[in-house]
View (cartoon, protein in one colour):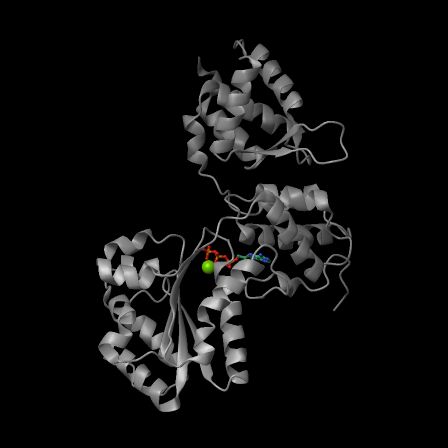
Length: 384
Ligand SMILES: Nc1ncnc2c1ncn2[C@@H]1O[C@H](COP(=O)(O)OP(=O)(O)OP(=O)(O)O)[C@@H](O)[C@H]1O
Ligand SMILES: [Mg+2]
């Protein structure tokens, strides 16, 4: 294998890899661990909790780490704790979930034809016999409810009442707890007693995450802080997954170029290889001035630049207005138009960093310049 001058270990950017450091989630990871810590001491305690947070906020990562930690600490405390994670988007029915649990526990079990409740009984008996404890993680738990059959959640919420068992601790993950409204009030309250809510990462937090993931996976100096900021700004809703994916693809792009560090042009190439995070159909609903401002941004950003200043953009916009005989709007309205395009996720805005004289707002495109041009062309803003 030839040594790469960009990557030290590309595999450390794969979705399965658990990073060594988790900036901005250490506090939440500790909180989560504290919720389940009682399992290590008292057999009679089986916590139930919820972890909610938007796309790419680190839920699955945190929970996989928790599972590992509980299993390892269990060994030290002389108890067997088996973490089993089921993705309910894949296994959407109670039967599918329980079959997955049996499989993960390595039990021999005649799967076919058995109801989820019978399988649950089988699992509880097995845990009682082996004095084991199960930490059942239901990832994307909302899919279980939207699939229609709520019986498993009812049973899991009342394990002690119905089955006299406290060998199953439950951790549910989803983007919000809204789906619980489909359950009856008492099940809802027992499931929702402990909720840990994560916010989407801020741009600054994403920069730290990108730097940390780059440090683990790339050669020293391969990822500069400006490029990391650019990547962070391209993510929507504080999604770390998108950043890690861009990091990997940008690194590969710079490697293909034969370079040893990632440039903005590599990130643009990487971004262009991913589907747009915004619905391009929305372009047709923009007002005339929004279209003109976006066209101006696309004109300036179709090369390999990451950001432009608001001053440059306003000048380009005014130029476009002049060539298409449209009266340009004043500075305040221009500014409000930028805010609207930002709210629609077509543009990103970033305060310029230290080191520059004064601070100005920098503008970036969140969609490909070519897509913006094509979409706007179709809607013909000059139709007047
Ligand atoms: N604080 C962090 N430090 C390092 N990497 C992180 C951090 N947070 C998230 N990641 C990485 O970002 C990616 C997405 O995280 P994860 O899969 O946990 O998101 P999620 O909240 O489960 O999203 P979804 O709701 O879409 O399933 C993973 O590769 C994860 O390792
Ligand atoms: Mg997830």
